[in-house]
Length: 104
Image 1 (spheres, rainbow, N blue to C red):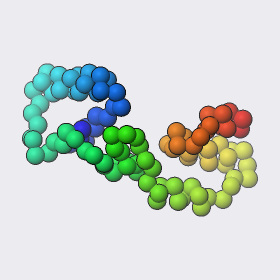
Image 2: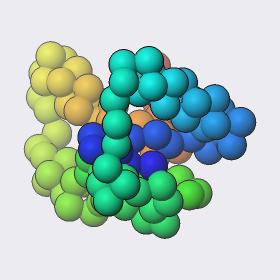
Image 3: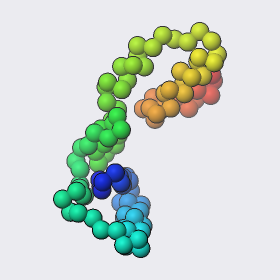
């Protein structure tokens, strides 16, 4: 769901409905109204914050990764920490990232 900069996304319908109910409860509490033409209840695929989001999962946009592939491997420990920190936004896409980063 996209409501003028409010995004609600869950993989589990029960969690989604509970959160949806909380958000609209807050709208009612604060007497906020919505224009239907600015609300989208179902998106099959949306480009959002550098990812494609659909009902199945998040997919990273290729251009977002290009900058990382072109980075020169760091030569100091501090540079390595910064380099690894830059990957935190895509850690879930890297198989065994948690185990690999623990070793570093």
